[in-house]
Image (tube, rainbow, N blue to C red; front, side, top):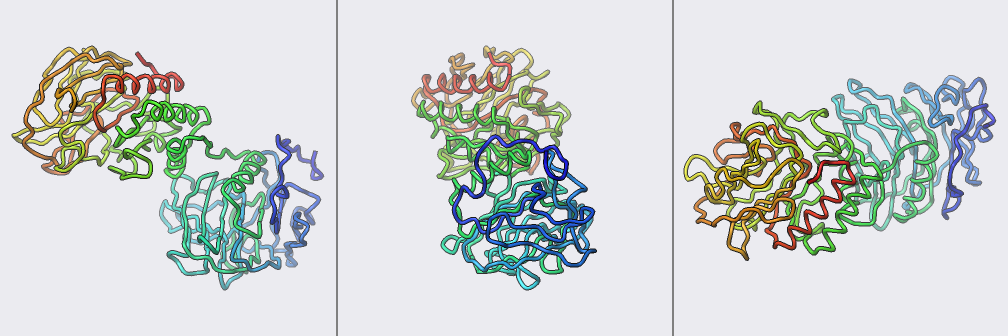
Length: 523
């Protein structure tokens, strides 16, 4: 039981901010012993670092309160967005790391800037700032060099979290490398310039930019911490205040995907992150990572997560293809679940655009390559799984279609290589449609087994539109081929180079393990 009578949830770790060298200041709203207050109005908030950087407010009307709200069973410091602010004597540093657990109550209709930790009215320093542009979007800023906007500002835009938080925000300023802004364990933005500014206030900048919300904890270090050190502090704060951080996994591709999901407004459970990590390890072990120009596993929590592809090129550091995320046309949250996949409709409205252009002259996928899909539920009528169409004649296509019986229509830059052929595809199976260079044939693999082989014809044209999922794009006009819209449900897709028989089986095996971990129907 805390001194303020609140039940505190215990921490499962012996780590504290003092465990890392360079602790310069530490304010903890849940530590009643560090707070001087009358009827909850705080006149002094003591620094727990031992450096005596105490924050004060002598004007009674301008004091935040420590009794009105809690987070994870712990008291927080609430600021009224009008004049609540606390001041202290800071030290100017070119190298510094700040952590803050914060929530703001800004609404989309309010045009304002709110300071979390400030360096006075003359400059922001490294202070984290929430700025609203008056629309549905807000920005979280970490100023690394004063008021100048541009390379001196690490800026992260968000719309899903309005109001913002509660969140663990980290801002790192380095004289060697500039600045970094992180939220909830994910790097969001960087800036290239680092100047020396002294923090001087909490809940505003001088008398300006008052915060409407609460601050739970602030930790400041007098140096730029390493990534490992930053993560230790973030995990400590996340556990203490009940904030779920982005999971951390070992595979670089998997971690990059987790980070991009959070940046897109989605989240990932630890179980899913581990399943994706296992999948990436299996792909690497099979030696087929370079086969993929785009792969989306349709996983994570919420539609924003579903739209983030795992792979966007043959390697993480190489050329990336297509859109940063799948461009959504009319899907809503109810169309997706992690275990059930993504379901389209036949009303000529729902599809995804990838931005990958396999039929474009000069593309590595121009003559040979693959399309992959995990078909959780077959369509009710013949319609496209994915592809690109060039109409009118010559109607060259990168595309394949299915009907309710699993019959397949498949093309890889050639017309009607499979025209209504029984393919062995049923609900739960994975499909690879490919033009195989070594075999000099068009092939269909169902759940890792070769089920169809067709001839390869002569390709006579190109299409400038990107490949679509649940539909097809044409290079005449910007819309989808509406006659191809699908009613099926799929759990994943990929676009890339062709596979050998052993590679196709290894891909299916890796994906089947992931599907089982996510609770999906797999055959």
